[in-house]
Amino acid sequence: MSVARLPMEADDRESKRVKGMVSPILGFSDEDKVGTIPPHDDPLVVTLRIEGYDVRRVLVNQGSVVEVMYLDLYMGLKLRPEDLMAYDSILVSFEGKTVTLKGQIRLTIQTGSDIVEVDFIVVDAYSPYTTIVAKPWLHALGAVSSTLHQKVKYPSEGQVKEVIGDQAMARQCIVFAISRRPSTEPSTSIENGL
Image (cartoon, rainbow, N blue to C red; front, side, top):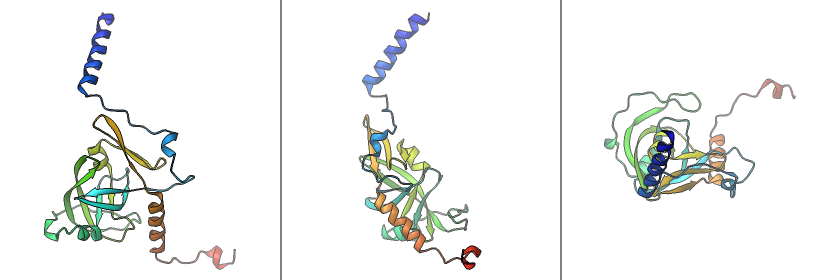
């Protein structure tokens, strides 16, 4: 009986391949690190096309469950305050502080020829990034990301396509974030000359 099933399963796989139903395998190898500046622990910062505009300094954060857009970008895209829908949840910043929410808006993100819609939470806070894309965007695109390889890979038209990170921009964002930190109290070891 198992002998009869094996050819059928093979025929099913073959017919799916012929119909273009099999998605390419997404993964990363050492070849994907070519072009990165090693060693690094840089965040993955990319340029994406949002609502028809090429937007730089987009942080890809696969650990987040919401897309965040900062108010400066929202205004720069010429979107109006009345376009925002109410958003009642609380959002906490990386520093553990509650962030002022302006609302939520559904916008398109174009990656190559693929367009997905995601809901952005618009916040009024400082960030060296213009926006943060997260699990909803990655999942809608069917994408996987790697900070080590500085890439996002996604299936499209039977191929694996890529969005390549910008390490220089990522490092600039880190410098901007550090320069905006409030000065801290000196530690006791510094005060004691240690």
